[in-house]
Length: 243
Image (tube, rainbow, N blue to C red; front, side, top):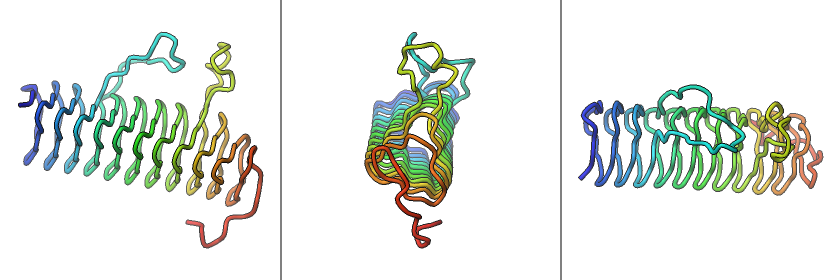
């Protein structure tokens, strides 16, 4: 048994699992497979060939706390999921996000509102992507990494497991922080090793390699390897490792 609002526009060859709820004005393309106990909120747009695993929640309306740093401003557009995406079990993707074609949002991942994710992207298991994040094409974010609000990841970026990005130097103790909140900018082809921490507003330059466990406190130079706590220049990236 499932509940599908009469206004839903459904393509051909769509499979819907048990106990799934699809709200008003949802648009579903052809050849879509929807698992059990999935919730698809009002207005969500799902492309052709998308697979949605059990327990996923799509188009969830955000309800920030009164003390949340990032506030809602105006009405959000619907969630749009591109063709041939895969949405993992119990993943949650909010209203106002756009997901490019052939992207994987893995099990237990969370993608907030006002997020744009490009094509052929991997968002790994348990990854948290906060609001106002831009992610380019063919970028990979491995399991349990935290991508904070107002972060930009360009094309071909690699984020290893358990990386943490930050955006607030004031830790919530002054109103000044609202004007200066800024996540990291990770440029095309950069790679960030497991467990690394990026401080607010740093730019990781093109083709930088950040070693595992490093603390990045300042901007890097292109095609360099940085490591340590805090991270410092170690050597140039091997030419064979460049895009």
